[in-house]
Image 1: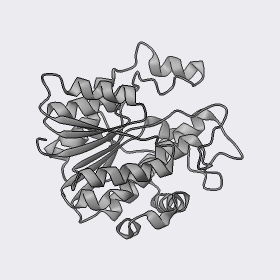
Image 2: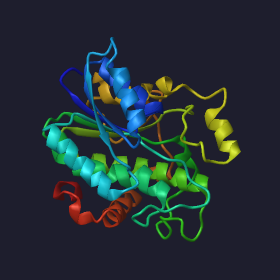
Image 3: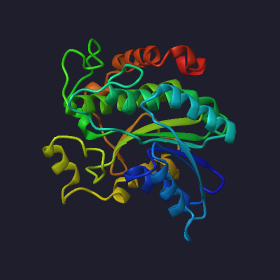
Length: 286
């Protein structure tokens, strides 16, 4: 990975931090996207220690804000002519009660789906400039529990914290499938994954039952959770693979709802509207 630029969102802790460190150990130039300056600086310091051949650049952004997502894309393009790997890792758990962002959008859907949708489409030209390149999006097996409700994407009529989270993870899989279709022939691949049940702080504000499941003694370490992320970002054997959902480094069939091509296209169109689609590059609207 020496000489390659890799962008990792949510790189201040958990899976994102472990993935960023793994890439740096492979010699990559890693762009750490963090909301917290303190956690971001700590991650940069860790990468600067002996044993890492790569380097780190910290960029701060709250992905709940589309204005900040756009500013992040501008900052990345200004510093780097090419991006070889984009890892959409940052995420939040479904809040209870329902919360909205400053853009007026349900927070879980905004951070977990709309932010990676917007960032990816804004960086497509930069990714294509150095093809072969890869987009890796962290989804979850939780996507299997729900179907998309296009009449209530924001959970305004019916809302549950876990339902919002699960649907946002389903959106990650549908987004990956549609992105891969649109990127055919460009040399840029798009894949997503379930990292396993990983001990991170994403569910710190969730009901006790979810905190117990996701932070219990059986939960994986962030390093193990990052294993499939790093595999999809670096392994030669998946260089030409696109549009797949992976678990433990292996392609796995996602839920029926996640394999609905019409739903994937419909979600893309809805996402363009919800992110003021005029800012989406024409190449992404093919």
